Length: 93
Image: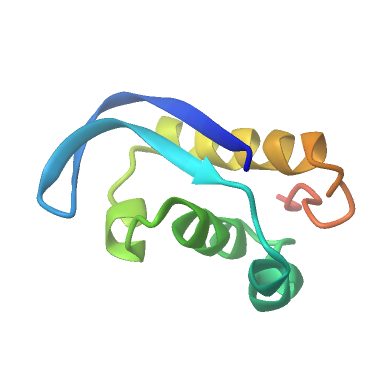
């Protein structure tokens, strides 16, 4: 299974532990079914990132603006590299 590790600008507390990386696992069909229609908004992409990383939405919500942008960009690139370009349309501003 493919994974994508994203280096964050600082450490965050997730599940009681400090970490400065977020690891996204390869999505499964059930993940696409759950989040596929949400991928045209930043909120939907962040929910997808929560599912793929195991981070609770409350931890994703605490990411800095720059780390949020990096996560959105890296997730889109990761999905594209897996052949899911049609799923990971970049959100409109």
